[in-house]
Image 1 (cartoon, rainbow, N blue to C red):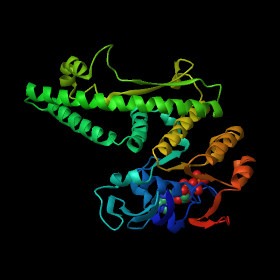
Image 2: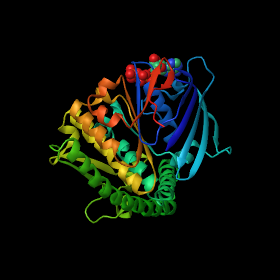
Image 3: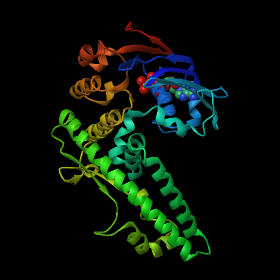
Image 4: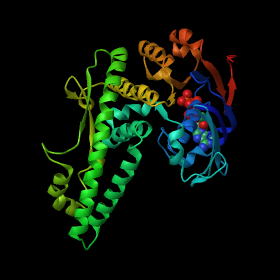
Length: 365
Ligand SMILES: Nc1ncnc2c1ncn2[C@@H]1O[C@H](COP(=O)(O)OP(=O)(O)OP(=O)(O)O)[C@@H](O)[C@H]1O
């Protein structure tokens, strides 16, 4: 969990510090004051250098400044880690973990599991399948020790096979070798994914029962394999076509997480508001799974007031107030969160943001 964040020249912040509480944190401020940017900085660290906003990462650096620096203290059980990142408009140019230099920011992502609820979350339902795959894989990365090595091995096999498909002189023996590697590793990943998905689905259904009991959602994993077919059979079947196209059409990288409601593909049927609830539910469903693995997830909720109606906001806040996760929620003001915050807000640490300045406004210990 995040215990301290310091920013220099990040978005509209010249310098800022935020020390969030382990539980619920509320960040208030006018439009354009810098609330989302605070969440974005935390997400950047926990996601290995991504932003949930889209747009160019070079814009993270404050206008006119040479680079942005982010410093975070992260607690993991009894241990505390210090992480420093310096990002110039062209990329990360310095990275430190506890005084040493790790390989990449993604190598330290395991220290701060971070999830976000924001206006683009709805893309989990409407967007490309790669987004849903990455979402499930994110959970497995934090929960299953064997996932990362399996994923790296599968990715290496995929890269080699694709390079071979595009090369002028193809050795069938070499192709068969990478077929076998890719088939074996894809099988391992799909085994892990389907196990994780069963658990995720159960949690998702429990969240939906609270947030939107009328939505009868279901999740299935589609591998693209025919009945009784193995990955090796499928790679052999599609080999000629793969050679023509120059890329591999079967494997762990093509699985699809299908979201249905009442038996119909969700994106063909539901409203944007309903899709938001389904997507939020999926994100929230990861929390207990991460907690069960002994980790504390940091959940970032951007602009809750304008994202959900009052009833859903109240249910969500009540849900977030329970459980072993850290939550940071932004809103324009306290009233925007509605009466729900009166109950849960008492236990929250509160901050006010104004023109790129952060001030703590609650006097909790
Ligand atoms: N690279 C940058 N340098 C300086 N300012 C920036 C940069 N990128 C964004 N900004 C500005 O930072 C301000 C804060 O943006 P942010 O999205 O964090 O605000 P917010 O409080 O979340 O607003 P809203 O409530 O409208 O979502 C905006 O005025 C934006 O124009």
